[in-house]
Amino acid sequence: MRRCSGRSCRIESGSRGRRSARCASSAMRCPHPRPRVRVQGSRPSRTPLVPSRRSTRMTIGWRLYSCDDHLDLWNLPRDVWEDRLPARFRERGPRVVEAGDRAWWTCDGAAMGPFGTSLIRDYSAITRAGIEDDGLRAARPALRLQDMDRDGIFASVIYGPNLFGLPIDDPELKAAALGAYNDWALEFNRHDPERLCVLPVLPTHAPEAAIAELERVARLGHRGVVISPFEFRCADPDWERFWDAAEATGLPVSFHIGRGTSQVRVAPGSWELAAFSAVGPMQLDEPLAMMVYSGVLERHRRLRLVLAESGIGWLPYFVHRMDAAAEKHVSKARDYRLQARPSEIFRRQVYATFEEEPLGPELLPLLGPDNFMWASDYPHPDSTFPHSREAIARAFAGLDAAFVEQVTATNCARLYGFTRTA
Image (cartoon, rainbow, N blue to C red):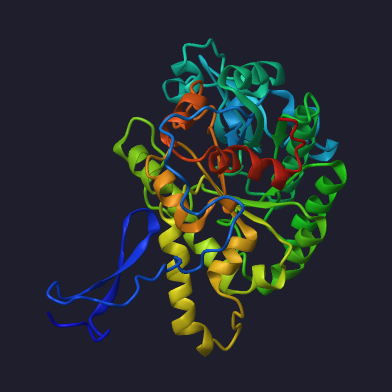
């Protein structure tokens, strides 16, 4: 039998991120050792990259932390802006107007969206669970906490009406409206600060306005901030001072999926809603690439970026593609030349939230558990409410409990400064 010279050996991908060596010719007997090849960009972690599958049953003996839940515009109480806007904006600010048997949020004479859930009741996880809801249940702290208890959720990081933004044309009025909302969010959180974390939303029309609101909400005690990457160019040099300020506050900065630059519309009753839902998580590829390659993250090593509702599936591929693109193109860049590998920057500074995702547990080992945080997505239609514990046990069946606990509790609690007692 012929022996392999070594030139015929190749590395082939196996299951769950493992790689092995084999000869191209089955007729050859290969004496070369089969190397253990680490997936490019991986790093040692306190929990194994490829967790044990010894157990087939999952017992969740810890408190769950959901890192991406929601309070949409239609959920908000009528008095959010009327009672909190500065006097000079109050007449033009957001308010509820009755129109026949429906009610609408309007601002400065223009419609913003529905009030209550009359138009989207069929899409609510609350309604699906058979719970009575007038459309405002998610914005009532006591009732929301009841639903969290029902679902086995201890703490919830909540995104407000930033998914599609506030459709207000006047930038000064919009900044004032966001400030008023952020004040209301703080009042909401105070009902149970260790369980409720509605994130404040920052204006994007000017870096100075964003910095002012960022520093104000940091002083008020908020745990993080949200800013829409679709409303400004995050790598613009004019925004460097914003990233300086964000790093100085220590607050995690979230980019949440939204309208993005997609051509499909959010259209209930149309095929386009399904199309939008399918492509939505991948909207954050460009903002992530800009934050990495422009050097924003590299220059601000203590800045932490959250990709909210991005999911897991596309990220292992994308992170490794960023490494490959860096090897080909960074050395030729005349404006900024990245020093670290994109995968190193991702592991050090970027977090991503995911929901019920059948392939998620299979793909997580490719990057490790340190950068991912589970979410219920309450009360959106994708939510696992009120069966989140069962959904997690089913999705992660057979994985080590420490691995699952890290992505469903530990990472979120550590990032947002929650006190974990169990």
